[in-house]
Amino acid sequence: MKKLRETQITLGTALALCLMACAAGIACCYAAFGWRTQAVQNKLREIDAIAAEHYVGAFDAETVADYAAVGYITGLGDQWSGYIPADQYESYQMNTEGKGCGIGVSVVTSGQGIRISLVYDASPAQQVGIRKGDWIVGAEGLTVKADGADAVIGAIQGEEGTEVTVTVRSGEDGRTRDETMTRAVVVQKMAWGEMLADRIGYIRIENFHVGAAEQFQNALDELIADGARALVLDVRHNGGGRVKEMSEMLDPLLPEGTIMTLRTKDGHETVYSSDAEMTDLPVAVLVDEQSISAAEFFAAALQEYGRGPLVGAHTTGKGRAQQTFRLSDGSAVNLSVEQYYTPEGNSLAGVGVAPDVSVGLKEAQQADFYFLIPENDPQLQKACELLT
Image 1 (cartoon, rainbow, N blue to C red):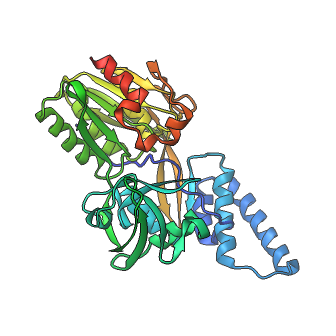
Image 2: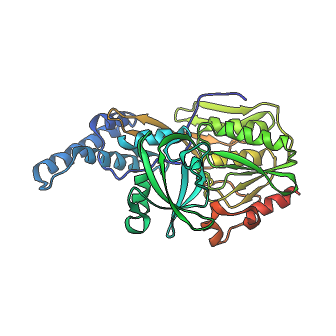
Image 3: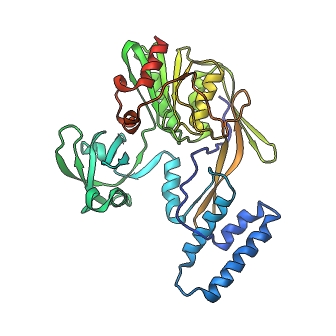
């Protein structure tokens, strides 16, 4: 595969509840918009002067600066661009690199509480026997019932090497226990496989963060070695990731040709391509309304090359790539800087990808998505049927 520079196409960054960007950081953004610079500066200076003279309350300048940054980025009218406060940048960056600091789990929150949807390999949680489907009841003296899910999740987060005590209820027998773990930097579980009935290999792709391609290749190799005769690739509920990782995953699945084209504001193009070496196993791809960004282009490429049917629901429709720019105070802006196109030159912006076979999930199945077994997953069952 032809390897080019990395471009991040993650789902827009978390818009923190902040309002006014520091002058130095904002000035860098202003410069990129030419004639708008003076108008924005004048507006902020005028508001600042009025507040300084008349506002009777106390305020924190850094908080006001953060909120202004959010306002500026929001004013661009691009849902995929965002602002990252300085105190959130490290965890944001770690996440895009396929890592995280904590006990090594992904969770789903609902009215029923906090349920563990993934346990990462070699993580503190795995080492003490925490499993997918278990419930987090509390942590560090806080409980979900009394203090809320957000407070408990916040208590679990912390610095590497520090201890945290988490109260866990087993998803199997309902027993509750306390587990004390040492927080650690762990690698996310991003792609893994299993053999289904009739020798159909299934690979779940959670995201396309750094390291996902290696995990995907390992899963693919193991399934082929175990005698898989067909593949189901699942990018449902996948929020995206990096173009490089996505391209490396597609390379063994596609013939020689273009995978994706990215185009900047000045018309410069970056092209990712695959080589001629590929597996000839039949393929089906699962997509849904929460297949976003790289997940959509992954599915679109396989569809346009005729590698197999797309099964599920229509995808989101994101067609822009973002780049993160660090500001002088440690915060950052994540801006859409490129349009991207499918192998056939199509933009998915506002359009998305339509499945070849539409199959929906019932409301209860959608709510329980991460815990569906193959027999209770109609989208997966249809994909397997098409490969039989």
